[in-house]
Amino acid sequence: LARDTTTLKRLETMRSDFVANVSHELRTPLSVVYGVAETLTDEVGDNPEIGRSVRLLQEQAERMKHLVDDLLLLARLESGGAPRNGRWVDVPALLPGLVEEARVLSGARNHQLELEATPGLLLFGNETELRSAFANLLFNAVHYTPDGGQITLRWSSDNQAGYLEVEDTGIGIEPQHIDRLTERFYRVDNGRSKSRGGTGLGLAIVKHVLMRHDAHLRIRSNPGQGSRFTCVFPAKLLRQSLAERERAGGGS
Ligand code: ADP
Image 1: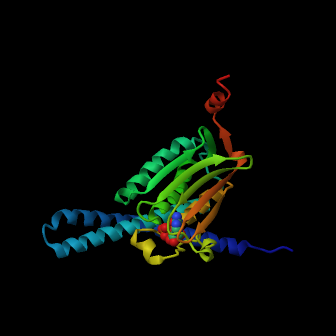
Image 2: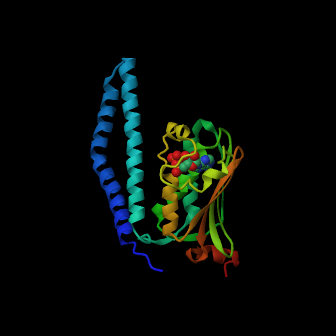
Image 3: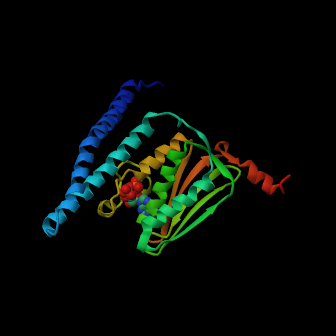
């Protein structure tokens, strides 16, 4: 049985080109609006009414900027094949920086952040893309976990695969939503996501980054108890660093 998918493929390309072009065109006017809002902030003096409006203007311009950035990133991820600039990424060295950023994001919400990483376990791929995927998962955990909750970031492997895991003790997700979470703009609770500046594109970005690395996302969650998002990487993309192997072998 054969099916001609040429038209479908062409339509798909048109769709993603269109989104990428619109996003690109929106960039300049948006940065002008944002810049003007910033200048106005300095000028409003003590008029509270105008002050509120200018703050709103700035917040919304910033939100649109995030949206446009995420749409452009997604378009780029969709259009390419395997990532260029692939190299051995020192994941254990990358993760502490992410945890630090998550700590800043958490601020006074005081989440308990923990990192468990296998020393010297390297992953072949595009560092920028991988970093952005891991950051999305970690920052989501901060957003969807009540104050003081526990968030653990793990990097490990077994004979079959490598696992980058983000576990939280947050609000969790009802089972009927799980299969759809990586769709663009799919949100369990629209109000909650938007009120904290979410674009609804984070997990779609994660999915595409993983697909480009022959990897996939596994989601386990219990409503009210927490969630575990695991990126599963094939063993062929893993390597133990030489220094670590020598250390494990007693330096011989
Ligand atoms: P958003 O910008 O809305 O967070 P994402 O694509 O990152 O978009 O996530 C999609 C949806 O998945 C979120 O709106 C939220 O409902 C749910 N979600 C993501 N991560 C978590 C988590 N750690 N705990 C609970 N729900 C989550």
